[in-house]
Image (spheres, rainbow, N blue to C red):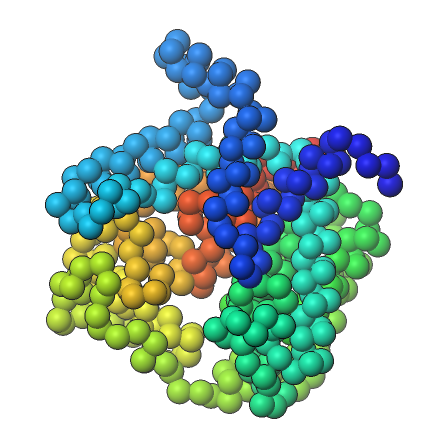
Length: 405
């Protein structure tokens, strides 16, 4: 394969997008990435400003993201009496327009995603060695490092690859599978990556990730049969084999997903709230009980969601005034609840509505799968993240069969 300037450029972009998902690599690398992408899009920015001066908007989503960032800045100024330092002027929404620029940069650069597929595959290979060695990770300094005590439950033998935890690695497998479906690639090569990501998903055993993978393939099946009218059995062989593996012994599978009917966690967080001592009222409403999911163990999400939603109930319109709401070291483990709690209902509807408007027949399978995944993980709406870059790309720029190296 001839190494040319464009390939090198794509490799550097892929590396900067992916590296911060790995352990010990600082998220500040994304600042370098965004600065680089701004430089690559100077003509776009110049044209956008010129059109604004003429009273026209050349890119509506970019303009709306700027407006949201500005509104967040206003909220932070209004919240000035609660500032602890000048750093409290910051709101993660300031990064939304820059994330859009990164997504625009990777548009029509399939080679970037191919490099990302290889990066994920390397992590999967590392995770197999970790599983064989009986450890969660080779990075012994990580807080979650431990040696396996047994191999009965997949949940307790989850491996990290090069990531900080198993959840991070499992999310990469899901995103990898979604991107594989979105992009054009020789079939045999695509199947190899698909098998790697599916097998990796079992070894990381992220239950939410596995459920979303099944959801994605069901959407893909619906699309192939009813929308594209181009159903091919060979496209569904790998996932069918995986489903059959779990279906052969339903009792074993149930025990894997319920961790032998483990008791629902209610002690993941305490009642002390780091942002505001009076943030959660003394009498809280049990939202998860009302939704009928309080008896399902979700690794403490029941407790976390209730706490966040009760805060949101008390601060419905403006939330935490544009500052990311955290309880001690915990975020909401749900992109929508986190954003609603941080910004309030008004900006939440405005922001999420922007993405919903751009869902269409070409991208709905991929976008809805990521949005479904975001219900169980704080995946998107970080400001700038690997998942945000992919999500913005699929929402605002993806066109089927319109990608090039």
